[in-house]
Image (tube, rainbow, N blue to C red; front, side, top):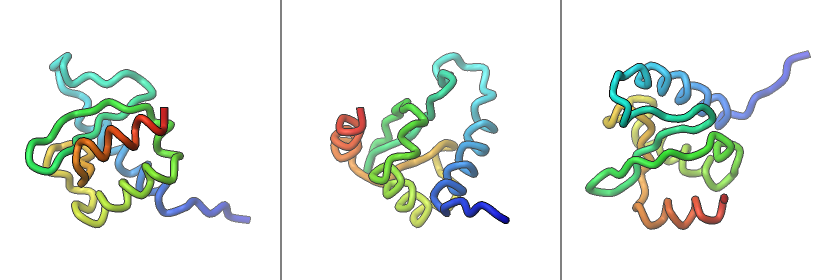
Length: 98
């Protein structure tokens, strides 16, 4: 009997695997604490946010992941997860998830 994993969770796992590839930088400014994920948000100027991985289970954050997948696939221009929304929209969403 197989267990079906929702597509968003599979996408999240692939993003996390790719994020691990980029986290081996020697710069301490790029360090992300265990249990967190760095995302880049913005329309023109990208801003980096470090969010808890528990956000990956939230439907509203999963919607943003779907939009990121549609726009960028798994090749993100910033080298990390890029969320295609305004900074204010992301801050509003994150404040509701906390």
